[in-house]
Length: 150
Image 1 (cartoon, rainbow, N blue to C red):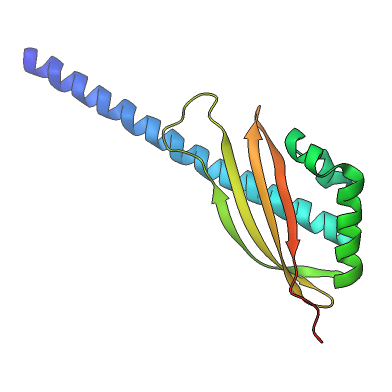
Image 2 (image 1 turned 180 degrees about the horizontal axis):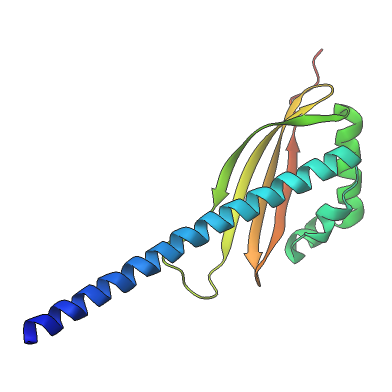
C-alpha cells in the first residue's frame, strides 16, 4: 500500500512536470509564430507603402522616445526612395526568447533578420520585439542596405 502511494505520487509528479514543459514548448511555438508574423507584416507594410504609421503604432515606449514617429516616417521614406519599390521577402531568421520554464511576469523578446528584395538592391531588415501585457511591441527596426554600387 505504501509503495503504491509512493508510485502514484511519483507518476503524478512526473505527469505534472511533463504538462508544464509541454505548455512551455507550446507557448514558445505560439510566441515564435505571432512575433515572426508581426515582424513580417510590419516590414512589408512599411516598405510597400513608405508609411511608418503601423510601425509606429507598435512602437515600445522606450523606442518611441528614441525614434519619434516623424523621424521613423522620414527613415522609411528615405530607404524606399533610395531602394525602389518592395519586391518581396526571401528569408527570415530568428525566434522568440521564450523560456520552457515559464515565470509569471518574465519578459519575452524576439529578434528577426528579414532578407528583402527591393527594386534597386537586396537589403536586410532587423526587427526586435518585446512582449508586454500580452502584446508584442517593436523595440528596434532597422534597414541595412549595402552601399550603392559605383
